[in-house]
Length: 265
Image 1 (cartoon, rainbow, N blue to C red):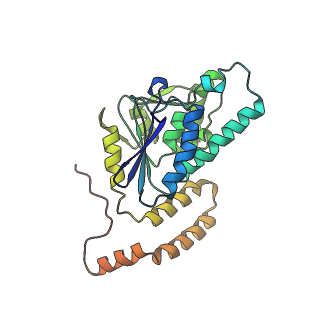
Image 2: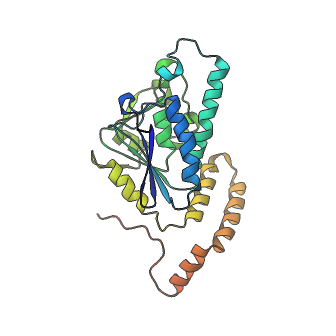
């Protein structure tokens, strides 16, 4: 079985980390599988959204300590740096993917597994899910973008507290902190994520891609730079086939091309 399974549910790509015996820890093979798979997802226009999940009741336990050399000091320091930089290349493909990404998280999302969840645009979790910036327990610092993404999700002070303490956060606290957007019943998280992803089938893919790209960099951009990006993006969208058809439907009092379903109370 592949360590990263790519399956399709209509217009949704489902990426399943498949190392259940290791709680889907990121070994070298799984990292390489991400590097090979993500460009395929990026370049396939038929894929409108992505669901990222883990097999065997867990999302991802983080880096595979055995694959790192077990902390025995037998890896050259520059080799270790190169390995992290190689991870950043495929991880940036995930963070910058101009398609909605939904993380379906169950069980543990520790260390780099927390970073993988934070790379998604929407995170769904079950009550048995736990998150942990576990790095300090082994004398590490948050990696795989953790020091960039965690402060943006929870705020700077709380991110420091989570990194300093390496404490476990349950699903409901994670929702209160802003890591998780919805907690769903145990055993339903993947179905819920796929159903949510299906809502994007008829969405304006180009417009949503631009929104994601601009917002991903908004915190390090000044206000006027974002204004410039906004103006250019809106000019592009105004000329798109999607907008032209949507405007025609609006003026003709026809149903919209894309409308988010109202949640039932």
